[in-house]
Amino acid sequence: MRAKQVEFDVTYINLREKPDWFLEISPHGKVPVLKVGEEILFESNAIAEFLDEVVSPQLHPKDPIKRAQNRAWTDFVPDFAKGLSGVYYTKSREELEAGLEAAPKVLQKLEDAIAKERGNDGPFFNGDTPCLVDAAYAPFFQRFMMVEARLQSGVLDGFPLVKAWVETLLSTELVTGSVHESFPQEFAGNLKRRGFYAASLFEAQAAE
Image 1: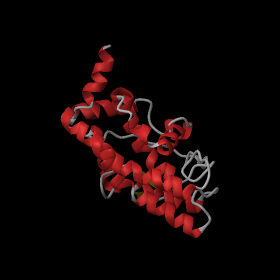
Image 2: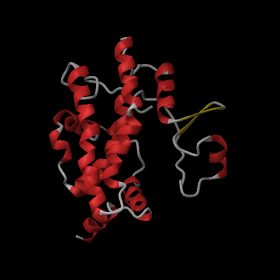
Image 3: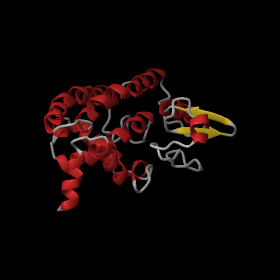
Image 4: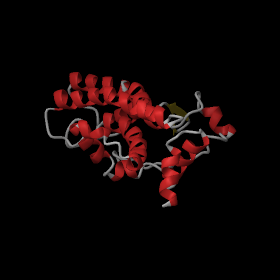
């Protein structure tokens, strides 16, 4: 919606105390949920596809082959997210290190995709303008880089195309402005509540 300059209102909720009205409209009890008139849409990719169909300019490629390839990479997001969150959704330093060893497997798939399918210098996934693949991956890179800024593992250094893509995503207001200003604190708090080791990285920085 931000990329298409759609006017919209956003209501933030506490996911630990989901209000009844939200549970009535969200079949899976998850965000985001989009209300269009009296209709309710849910699941991120489904919402993004709907918006791309009804609001110009279209962010999906016009070429049907390229469009199908883009959809395939948005379908890869759950596997990618598991691979990357395996770094910070861990209970110990040992588990975190194991996550770092596993992360290159999913990162390499994206590195290869950008190298083989983009055919230009970017800086976004398809080229010089954002697409739905950018929208799908940005939130996960955003969370990972909050941890990486403190961890300093350098795991992205071995994947220069992905690293440049991440830097582009996290330098645009389309991404940085898409979350509430308290998001970094909420993210760190969530890590702590769930007993994840990465929370200690945020606490160590706060103590400096």
